[in-house]
Length: 481
Ligand SMILES: Cc1cc2nc3c(=O)[nH]c(=O)nc-3n(C[C@H](O)[C@H](O)[C@H](O)COP(=O)(O)OP(=O)(O)OC[C@H]3O[C@@H](n4cnc5c(N)ncnc54)[C@H](O)[C@@H]3O)c2cc1C
Image (cartoon, rainbow, N blue to C red; front, side, top):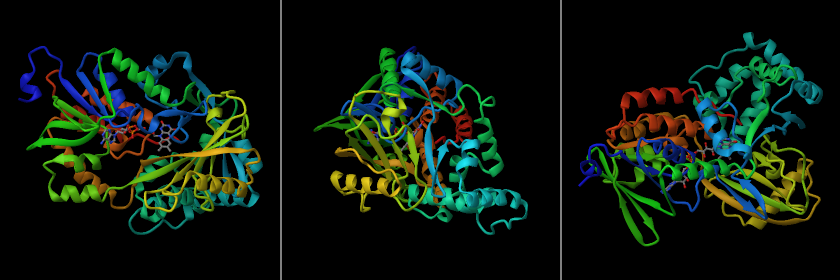
């Protein structure tokens, strides 16, 4: 008997949520406000997915630099503020980026850029801006590189964006799709970048310009607080529950099967709300989807990442929250000092530097020992003029397989094949960063989850027209760094 046929009039619909990252947690939180009975299935032992936090030597660490951006939708921000209360800090952004061999404040500040950019680099930028109208437009099919070249010119493209994306995605910029530029590059012309820099000037900035929200106990405290609230509303979270099969009866998803140790459990519901990678969903379908869907899913790639945590015997390494490294001479893309995100002063005599090393399983870094990675890390910092002069206590690493969706030139057609097939399934909805292959922030994952909850009808169906309208809204999501 299906969950639907067992349901009595007046019963709330039952929703099984797959994954307890921000999207899954926020779906549980929104649905249990009187819309549905919810069970959340999560493989990990803790909530938060890529946005979780953990402690190393008494210091809260994240999976790389994580900030909650004030540009979040009003209702999302209001919920996060209400859930965290005084534990949510509004912090000034204080980072540095390497441009033209010099350190420049990041986010960019006009006065700092004027003083610090190498004169030849600055002159070249001004030249790009002045000559934009006369620049020959790129011919042929558009790609990330052609759109950036046309919009920003060669100086910023070649010195910043091209090496940075090559490092992040492991592909040349002309093999990356235009979508990446639309999602990721907030200043599509030098005029717009200058406009953003002007807004950073004293007297011109708003209350949250150049600032970010961050919880006292790490970014993952947001997820923890939302899980507690959802549980208080009746949501049930099952951690350590690996989803191993999604059973399908024609076009209807009938049940989800989890494995905990040696025990398999079958979960039935009116709706399955999935936030796990869409490629995993396709792989777990029983019976499998048509061959063209399987092939499309196999062609979709996620970029992995190693987070390298260097534990140092010092109160602090630098005053900066993050350092951004666009150049290809070192393989890490960013380094953060977690204590500086919450202005933590303790523990004394300890600080941690977290490096983001984009890397896929099979690449040389992936199987390297923590000790070896630590040695390379110190050498890279030394080469950049940031020598590690204090004792290194040890190095720890974490590996994530689904860090970034890879928007190569073919991804769109493969994604659409999988997405259209999933949209045709009854009792199933895929969303979140991994579910919609969306290069997004946590506040976007929350917004998607709220929209998914909004689309559930009292009868336990998904209002497909409402969902289509929400999907259209998601196209406006832009990544904040
Ligand atoms: C390096 C880095 C830096 C970032 N910085 C920021 C930032 O500063 N600010 C910001 O807002 N966002 C940032 N993000 C993005 C943010 O991490 C994501 O937007 C957010 O975590 C997406 O949430 P999600 O729930 O959609 O997916 P995820 O967080 O990936 O959660 C998916 C969940 O599904 C679970 N799952 C997968 N497969 C299975 C299975 N078979 N069975 C059971 N469970 C399964 C996973 O364990 C995971 O918990 C950053 C991301 C990265 C990689």
